[in-house]
Image (cartoon, rainbow, N blue to C red; front, side):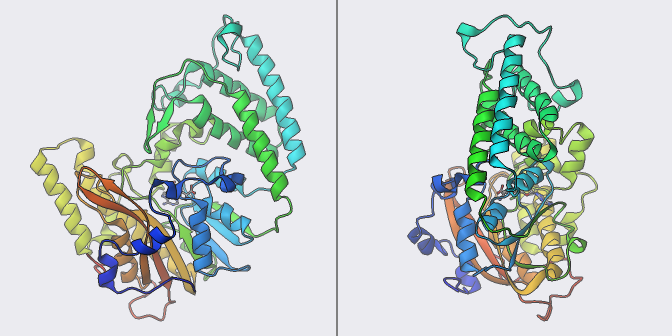
Length: 475
Ligand SMILES: C[S@@+](CC[C@H](N)C(=O)[O-])C[C@H]1O[C@@H](n2cnc3c(N)ncnc32)[C@H](O)[C@@H]1O
């Protein structure tokens, strides 16, 4: 194996560990997770802003010496970066994702058996029909004021009230929304199920990146509302580049791929024992990011979330990484009740809150969500163990955070410590990139926690052990 060096606990906790190697690879800085031009194929069909990049997956496939026949798991697969990259490399892979739109995206991005010619020609005729319909409505797709006429339609098409109330306010203006709904209507009648999935994914991308008023910085927000935007033309461009990608990929060897809509804290019964040789993943971090909010517009337009109840049910399946998704009955915190470092951080956050006189409902939850996050990750790591072949290597990409009243949370170190308590071997913490947090004056590290599952022989790795305490790695 190339450069997986076992480091002492002391060296792992020092600032600067792994930096030299990472700098030598030229991977530190914001450009480290940007999608490179040569990686656009499939990855670009629809992806989260700042998803981890395909080159990181390649790096760990190579380091872990994962070869044909092996199966890679991504238990938080999001929009499928690990899965798509593994498939491109001819490897078997399985994903788990709890957010339905992300699960859908991963599923479609692994379906390369669709005929590129049919996809393209069907898309062109649908686009033609919708363009004509929009002209007739008086809402031309071109948004060219010269050709703009008074709408002939009695009123613009809209989502129903229950659905529009789920959207971030002003996240899409009425005219682009009308165009997207016309296109959606046409897709449901003009495409068979297989092609329809690809067409709907292209619509998801169009909604976010062309039609909406959304801004990502990296958190989702709403920018200055634009009165109008093209929808059909960018959608057709997305469909054409999908068809081009499918043509390129047609001769790739088939591999075994699957994506499961499930909660990664409860994976025990989902797969046979010892199914996986490696894990490459980027789980959520305790950073207030709400994945159900980031993906709200396309989730609602594509019908994955239709009501507040749907939204609540979706949030309940996610690792608690933000205060908007905490529920009274949550109990994942009990899994880290004996972890003194996590308890210390939670107490410090709560102490700072009281000291600063912060009393909002969200602020009162900062300490609790931190414990719930690590408790949830602990449940996941515990449940995963029987599914791993002895000797399996795991890479978890996580970032340090200081989102809660500027109290530092060294996410990678804490996860490594939890994993150690559960019987995993901690191979190392490798720097992926870092950024300076002006508020705290400290470097926030995004790093890869590299673990090895030795099998159940190791003392302390009992099957039912789920409540973790401190390990030798605690900082
Ligand atoms: C950092 S993102 C992963 C991004 C991914 N690497 C990609 O290529 O898009 C984390 C993902 O974990 C998902 N997630 C959160 N909690 C989950 C859970 N309990 N089970 C499964 N997926 C979960 C989120 O919905 C989100 O898509």
